[in-house]
Image 1: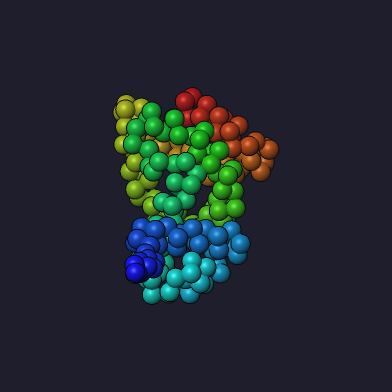
Image 2: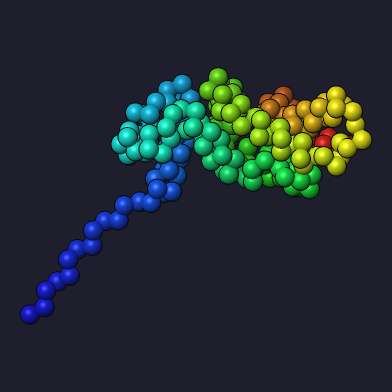
Length: 186
């Protein structure tokens, strides 16, 4: 007589899978209820994990929002902070099209205090990235001129530019990206 094998024990998700589940749940909560309603308790319930699990992955709201910003970047097709002028130019149109695909999250990120806090948590890195990426293009400028050019280019390559062109001019993400790319090249 042969014995049946013992049933397989369910495997626990990896730390990366759990982290991804928490960030995806945060995206769902923000889409549905906005940033203001998000608590670690509500997030744990949405992600179907314990609140302690959320805290294991993100020690505080700041760390959670910072991770969520990176998670959102990946969803809109942004490959992080541009590392070169070529990468910056190549990414504008796909990123703006990605903004269209994640419109609710983008609006929440751009139009709420929590979204602003999330964006500002990476501002120093983003500014340094633009300085590196555009070092060659701004080499002959005075420090003040360089700062102005970098500020304008960062604005053009932003969710704010996308939102303005979308809401005020009726452009979709591709059209807005093309307009922003033209302006940056000019």
